[in-house]
Length: 245
Image (tube, rainbow, N blue to C red; front, side, top):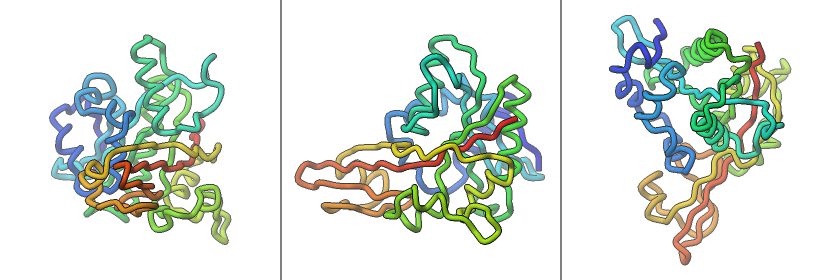
């Protein structure tokens, strides 16, 4: 296996973005998610788009990240709006010409055939290395705990703090970060917020929403729907973690 970036291999953009059913794709339907288009990834953040290739040169994993400035005069703590606001920060810094000092990981996706092989660990290590290579000081992540999909109704404050007997986080994705030296900073309660019509949610999730809370594939929180008002709102909490160098 070897890891390349999109800057050196722009031809891998589409194959890397089509690694198979990864769940949770609906988060890119939100306002912040729409900022992260393939064209912008290629134009602005290609050095921070990493792709793992197998021995035949076929993409088997990707890691997306964006550089931003944190802390700053107007940014004294990691935002409660987590993933959403981190993307907005990166876009603002790009428009304002502000030099970044931090890398924020947006997602690590492993091809279905390679899941369970531990491939996410070298992808995170590669992000840390890329941050260091480009003069950045830290890696931050608005982590979506993988196992939370099985317990969408459990508050994140309860779920994320669970520990195993050996003292490590119970959730395997939180545990992966912890084993690489990351520390939990805080819960970000509004990390991803998406609203849409009943038809929108049918398109995004394949689910016909009913009144009240609805569980959707890839969701780590329910979608609250009001059919009469033709509206469904999804708000998921994440966990801010920092990988210091």
